[in-house]
Length: 115
Length: 110
Image (cartoon, rainbow over all chains, first blue to last red; front, side, top):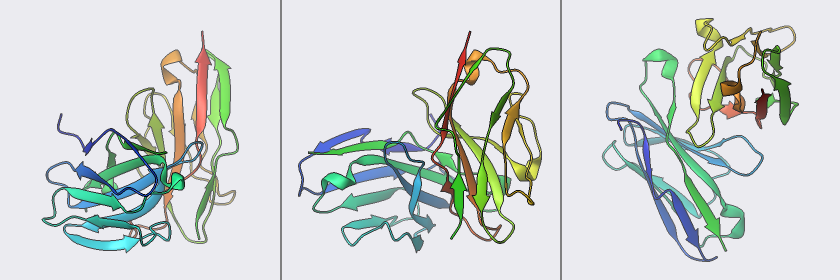
């Protein structure tokens, strides 16, 4: 499968614990995006990278959230001191600037449940 | 800030009936509009975008700037069209992040 991959697919954690998710984009894609989707809502933008540079962060991304893309390839999203309100599906997408109107290709998501 | 509204949470039709999934947006400039679809147990994928003016799987969508709408239409629904449909926009070509609506579940019954 050469599409966007995300790990783990599911994560159950207790409130107050830290969690980290990984996203592997399509190999030649230089942009990588993180979205969050809660029940009954569409995906909401969190942050995005072009290569290793984090270019934009949403107001949804509180201080407990941090994202990295150290070598311009895979990315990690860490949530510290998780809260029940963090329970959601976390989606990663990637795109290639200048190709196909910057179409974003989505991964399968990581479903986080905070108990 | 931009906003996308999909007024229907659920649209249920019979096979062969016409389908129209509504999408309205608020943005003062000229956005790029998209329809994304998520079939059961599959990832979110692009269905079509207004710039390319294409028809995918029999679906079309026309951008109406006067009514700020981008409704998705299909003349004859098929059972395999059952899925979650999301309308989304990018504010302008220099911007990159998608703003999604809440989605409409389309159920096509035999």
